[in-house]
Length: 177
Length: 345
Image 1: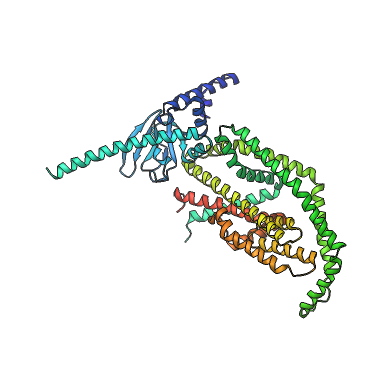
Image 2: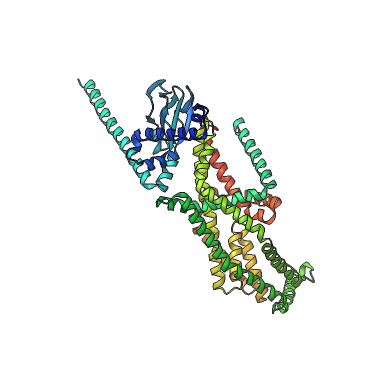
């Protein structure tokens, strides 16, 4: 793909060498993603095989608010801006190794925000059908990934619950000074 | 009212369908190999997935399942082919030399008497039945003589099936890779849904045909109808064609009974058995095997059979409905996918 274009003119041996280097980089990147924590080298390789590598130019949408959710993305290179089009605000900006859209791994609800490539960006797409396939063909890996995803979502839910309680008590204090 | 986008999509789909039909027609044999390989891979892939989930490399799992399928096919052919061959021979013998020689003219007299108001005096039933059975026998010999072509077809299909099983996911990934970013998620979602629905549909119709074939064979064996295996096989294959298939199989069974026994006596019970099997199929087997969403309109079925017959003769008629079912699955998943992603309204 595009990486091969970035290499200098080289022999097969060199391109093979770079290929291995690239693979190593990808595995290192994936190892750093919390969802894939605890997976061995072979298991990470199996995960890498089902990921979809995509390249987006600066300003290009990765997905739009309201689109049906299909899966999540892990940033390999570049920066992604998560924006709320309905409120015209940037919710967050994410960089290498970070991921977004993970809620869509578990439901088909429309995306709640848009993801926009802030600069030229490479991402790995990891989608619900692929996770289901992984659970069928490599249940040991699939289960670990689902466990990690659930843990991350549970953590977010817990934090949201605390935040919700804090805001409610603030509101109560405002209404009943 | 139909919007411009909708009209454009309908036209595009029609154009693509026409192009596909022309391509299929001009390179029929190659397409047939690919389609049969795809069909096999759809049927076998769940078992390959299961083996892979037991930590077996996919290439090995594909090889094993393909060998098992091939072995099962050889066993079935080894045991079933001589039986069918014998039954056709026996049928031919009975018509030509046996007691049928005496009973057919009697039958003819009865038919002429019943339908005297039509003014028919001679039906030449013996000659016509002999010609038909002879033709059937010749067809079997023709198939046997083109065994080399068949072998090439089988080998090529097996190789293609193996690669579709082993590298199916890579192929899908490769297809998705060339889709522009704007349509990437939509294409992925549609492709996955088509893959799933198509697999379920193909496995469903084959399972349904198999159950009907077995039920018919069992029913005919219980009724002591000669050539019950042949009738079961005809029922199984005919079941691929809704509406027309089951009556055709009932007609074949009744004809064999009339020809071999020389009386209409068994016909009512044969028809009753086929009706019972149909009821069982409609109420129990089909709801369990075939998704209701793939049910085709009778008019679609008639047109599909006519087009199939026009393009590929009897075989085309036989496979027209499953192919129309596949087209419906693809088109509806495509439409709903485009709608979900607001590409059409």
